Length: 82
Image 1: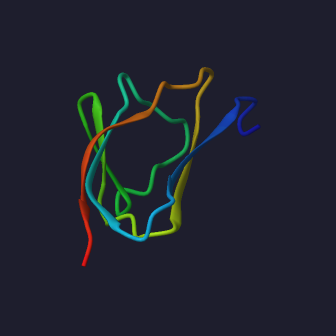
Image 2 (image 1 turned 45 degrees about the horizontal axis):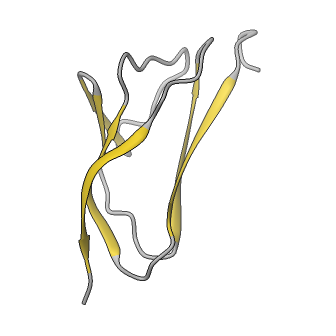
């Protein structure tokens, strides 16, 4: 807990060898009591976008602090395979 509030963790996993690009998440009403690294996630309205690609067989993790958990899901994205 941070500031007597729950710290939530969002974990995106790319299990394949291809790269995930232009990944957009739904994050309706998203807020955090602690700063979100804007070099990793761009927040605009009800969407959060990964700034960088999600390379094959890797995870992307970020944490936020809020009283309730947000329903964050992948909304869209592309796949690039060579």
